[in-house]
Image 1: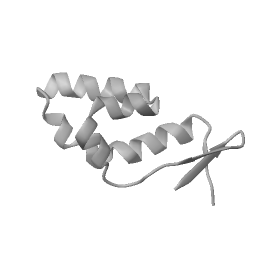
Image 2: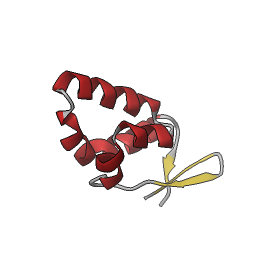
Image 3: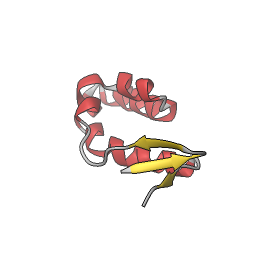
Image 4: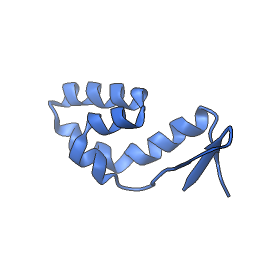
Length: 76
């Protein structure tokens, strides 16, 4: 899926995030997704690190929702 804002285009995956599974919070940091970084860090602390098994199922969808709420538009 491609999203646009101010003439910039960004490709965003949907579905399961293998990169999130492999790199955890570092993947969110590399994307500049600081809200996602904080959420993942808090979840990891609360669950004793077990959240890394669940977060990859929802990360891409939540990232896309955060981008759209930040003003990015889904290109058709």
